[in-house]
Image 1 (cartoon, one colour):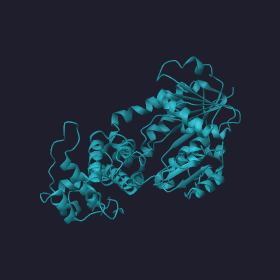
Image 2: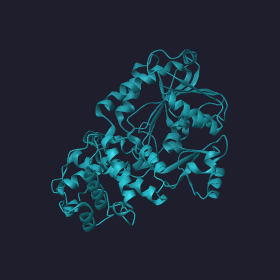
Image 3: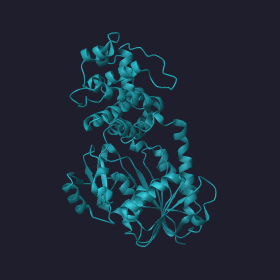
Image 4: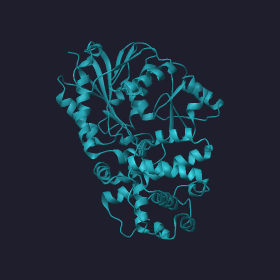
Amino acid sequence: MTSHENPRAPQAARPLSERDPRVTRLLLDLWAQTRADWGFVTTRLAQAFREARFLHSRDRRDVAEAMYGMVRRVRAIDRALERAGAPSPPALPTGEPTPARALHELLAYELLTGATEVAAARARGGADVGWEAVLAPDEGAESGEAALGVAQGLPDWLAARFLATFGDDAEAVAAALNERAPLTLRANRLKTGRDALRERLLAEGVPTEPTRWASDGLTSEPRLNMFGLRSFRDGLFEVQDEASQLVAELTAPPPRGLVVDACAGAGGKTLALGALMGNKGRVVSLDVSGRKLVELRKRARRAGLSNHQALEIGEDGPLPAEVARLAGKVDRVLVDAPCSGIGALRRNPEARWRLDPAFAAALPETQAAIALRMLPLVKPGGRLVYATCTILPEENEEVVARILAEAPVPLERIAVAEILGRKKAEEIVTADGFAIATRPDRHGMDGFFATALRVPKG
């Protein structure tokens, strides 16, 4: 084992490869499909669990953990099987690995995580593979981005970006992005407060702890199904990472103000902004996806949010007349820009394999264009808040520099402490104090960036 590899993680007492054959078959099918297209694991698991009625709750939990674990460690798995001399037959026409290869990958994962022993792997996977070599030291281990990529499950191009950006901290950042994300809730101020929600959840058998920075946040055991709780159905909370909640707080919508959530998606930040406004004023949610806005409207009804309007817009060109009429009138415009999502890899680990480096390289231009397109909506003295869920500087500070350079008016950067207060801001801001910059290895939350830009009054 190289110095880069993670310690063995605790696993189920009985490995999945030795469970009910139906459970093993389901896992291998899910893994083969995921390896072929790197589709969303969360969506794939949810569909499979709805259909596989034979699964017990422990089976569902363990299948999910194995899936996420294999996604994160696929390069180490491949490297170990190469050392073991495992055959690597061509993929099926669908792009999926053959059933034998998928089983070998599962067994290698279980060996690497200490969930099974060599003798068991040989019995299940065949004697033509040198299973002892899976656990042998990697004599041909590379250095630099290849070593980081294999050890922490990153494509080489992304490992190189981590090394260039974080230097000696690159491995800590990558390792933190491989950990299970905490389950973080936001108490819905329209219906309850954080303390009251905490008591209600405890009565429903769910202990929680207050978040350190977000004013309305609570954290709980990530394995719990919060969506089945009566308190969720009653709209008392939303599942939302602490960093995402802080973006809404940094937006700081004024009482009875006019706020535009320019890249609203399914509305997590719209709901947070509306709650901060106490259903006063107006929140206008924009997105290029009508389907996501349908989901936003459903969530708003459950949350009791009544001061919002959801409008679909085109990806480019003039804004719809209903939006264009807001020019120069909006107090706050939040541009939570589409990004690489690298700061949220704990939640969507498969995204690292799906993300195309050419697409990632083109994102900054798109991000700056969206911000500049929305800037005319901001009234004199109002603010544009630019945010992403990535930790790469080319999507964050470099985009902000471009916005400042290309804006038709001289924008002023606002210190985070001026909005959130010095005590809250001091541990989560950039060195210059003008932006929130969270990292999972430092703050235990997703990697987010957010900064506020003020339009001059005169």
